[in-house]
Length: 297
Image (cartoon, rainbow, N blue to C red; front, side):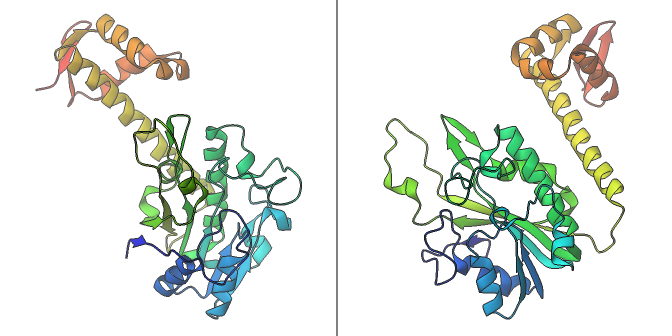
């Protein structure tokens, strides 16, 4: 089943630990994936580890509050063997702050204490790459993550994680229904959109043939570059459509500047990028005369 819903958390772990995941979720995943070695590098109160051991699965739990820093310490070296399944349940941004509130004192590498959403996305990416490295060829790695809406902005942690990891390795996206969360008891006057009542379980499968780490990074960089190129192509195409299907470069520049200021801020050579996009995609764009372009027929 790709939709999981368990109203009860079960007898595993510490029920007072904020953000605890139902043990039945782990039980369902273990029954489906049948790992022999399981690692949870953000085990919190230990729910996943208790479920795994009850099912006679060799299980290892690590966590920042136990001294393991997923941003600095190798999971593989800490465990001593690769996992069939390496699954994390990180904080959902600053929705629940852990170090200094749920446990211990504030820690700079606590994912619930990131400086910004971009900082969180980058650190979760590092954590997932660490998990990937700790997974045996053909094994699964992944995360349980929820999106959030804050001050009118919807932040999709799962979409960003999928975009940053190798597309060819994505194996499954499961929907997990949220139960007994604090937000269900609160009222949000003026909110027209439905409240977020689901989370995601993202699973990637590490390839049977492992290439070098530098090769893996190069592949991910190429994937991100292709996404950026595709975004520029879509942007220029949309601009031409809005200008009636044909326009001069100066008209295109003006429209881009008005509608995509964030792209300009990120790329001071954006006009050259527009020209490159037009010239390198002539199945989409056609030169009419010098400095004038149209949509290709």
